[in-house]
Image (cartoon, helix red, strand yellow):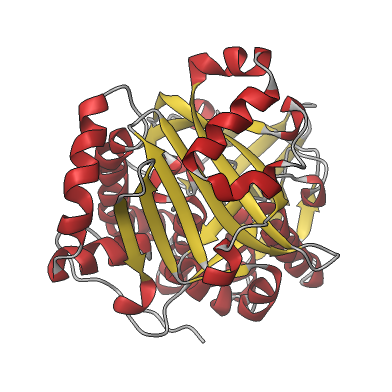
Length: 402
């Protein structure tokens, strides 16, 4: 069995730690933050593929209790014209998504780590690594050293810079658009209808409302997203919050009660995006997974799901091949087609919803819904949404859910 260092205790890192621990490996997790229970984050949408991986980890029932079941994704423009209407059950009758607060998912994974007595070094940012023939040594921000690891898994997110010290090529492209988000009580019918609802006005305004479960007082909770160009953030901060709320209500008047609790700009957070590309996810005994390897625009909403399925495939490769470099090479060979598919599709689809190309918005409103209702196209879109499409050409995977 190997001595494995996992850099980053996010979704990808925690899932990998748990799966490799089950295989009998000696696991050491290094996390730059103090504790995961202090992590705040927007809601995320777990897809059938991601839920299947959580079932494998024994967390399916717990995530279902902490989130909101999602049956469909519905999108319309500001005139009420239907643009998207994707129903999971049309792919498989038992399929569904789950809206959940990011911090709840982190907490469940963290509790599972602690229950397995896996070693976690909090407030430890790994800054340097040195690869030897049979082992890798690490150093943190305080120049402490950690030596003798047989395998390294880098899962510390899209802002990771550790690739510089291990000679792995990685290209980072900032995306010009981001999103404001907040978590609030949901006074719309989104939770009741089990729907992620999006509303668009051209390609420069997009509003999303995702149910994410209930709060301690049993009120429905939702994650609200508002598309915003990076250069407009300062302007937004300087305008009255009431002006922004008026813009939101023009797209979805049903949010009037929901917006009453938002009184200050500080109640919303701004998230920017990067596209990250790697020719190979590994070099010798070091491998990158999750957003550290393939961050992309969240338009397809697959970050958490790809992280979970990354972890599962990596664990499978290590279970079938005892030589770490060979197992990592097998992972890269198997995974690159799926990642290429989602990254290219993300680059293709994102400008339809976030860009300055106004003509794309008009074409989207006219063409996307009729096209999506063609049986073959509908199944392709649903398989992609469910994070079950392995590549451009290979057949859709299927998974079991309760």
